Image 1 (tube, rainbow, N blue to C red):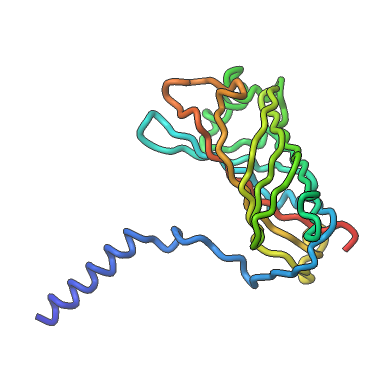
Image 2: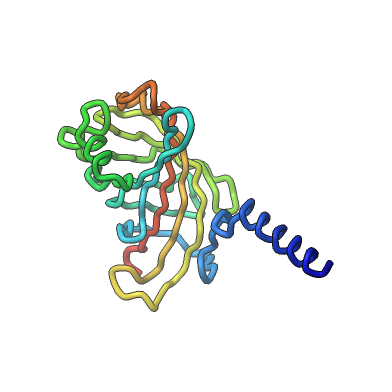
Length: 214
């Protein structure tokens, strides 16, 4: 009986672990820095910034990729958040979907990113609407595949504060954000495999920036 009880408990624990794996929980920033004095201009740290995307594949699953080279700047003004701005550039050639053959098709294909003709994706904000608690809506124009369309990102601050143990160019006063949106690739002329790949694409931007001037 004791053996059965232990076996049942072990099975229950295993089922719980499978149903809710540890990595499913949202990670927390180590240290939880939340300095309020965040005003200033920031340079994006390309080594701790990425743009991820997820698209539906063949009507049965999801497929994800990442752009590894992201650069740009943003400004923060807690007293006048409507003045917050962001200007971000993504190198199309830094695309990685973890399958080289697919990467080449996506980067070179005229119906996909066509990196030779359009080597960069660019976002420039037009206004920011603060929603409180480090959250807000960032409106702007995205240029992709030579087409510019308005896009709105949901923005959430992860943390902010002085990080003195990191050497330059990584250390200093840092802020970090996550920004998410969903775009319709057809709006930008990225219409390859229209029947096999979803038209909607989920985008997640993870940004870390270093305040200029300390």
